[in-house]
Image (cartoon, rainbow, N blue to C red):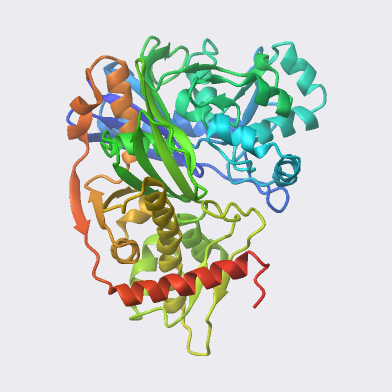
Length: 496
């Protein structure tokens, strides 16, 4: 009996059907648009998200030659901080979903920092005050939609990240829940208590009545009801935010295991076991997963733009027609010849946390070609991740020696080799790059009792290729110095 994984991402939804050995039986993706109503604002239509889930589920079953009745359990993984608000009675969205990339609450975060509130948020949630997270997005919705806060206080409205919204729809409105990993990204959950923090809720004026119930990552939390093409009664037994699901899907079950996902952004996580590690270098403390009564934590660093930089070359500049074309274009030159691209197209995440930073291309000459720009883009992605690797090593007090990778851009051999070189570690790539969906399926298997422990699901993830560092220490230091100089320019408006 197969496991069905719903991977609801920033630009589309992918559904995988996996057998218990980890073999992919069927796969389908349905894309949907993003909306940019103002500079710095990014939105989704909730009904378009839902339609993509329905369409991808139906198509994946067809691709696998299976029926909905064949499915053993459902796992969900999702874009995490994206924020939705809907009517409990009708399911009608009150507003478009505010996407994790959205920066509209930057000023509110700045005000909270200015009056000294950030240490309180940091101590309880492990997060920094940044518009990336859901809490200020929800506060904005409650402020801006007429009567929304009063209706929320009366219990008429429901807030959720995408996991909450999908469980609510999949269960026919029976369950309003979120798992601990998604709750840990809201600025509202106490990391150690795994419960909503009343003081922070008051700080953001968020009423408890609007919040979902917090549940473990692997547990029977709901059953399908009224969801074509699955029958009623299929357990929904695995939920995790996309990066935590990828950590689980890469079988990073031991303390110190590290993975990086190269999707729209790049996200580096290290398993810190049962300890909440407070970062001194701008990383986030977060929940990795909860299974039964056992909670595993992680340190996380995020670069907001990774694969999105390649999409920008494709859609914004027209240098390539499809994303895979970037590797041969970058290989058309032997080096970037001093061209550097800092992909701060949505501000800078860890370790800088500068929402006002802007992207920068520098080092151009009359001899610069599209190939140089393509190569500089891949190097900029890797250098951004390199900052996270360095911060993580300093927080842990030891170098990182190995990193597992996944996500679409990890298929790029040139990028992976440069990542190994600039970060001086071994990069391990699995045979299947969709570790996020795989992790959701593995969690669903644990939650449904198919696997008695995470280690019993480890066989579902297999390493196919490794990249080892070959760059000299002098060249690495020189590249890092040039990168830091370029990053400094982005933080001063790009001035020389």
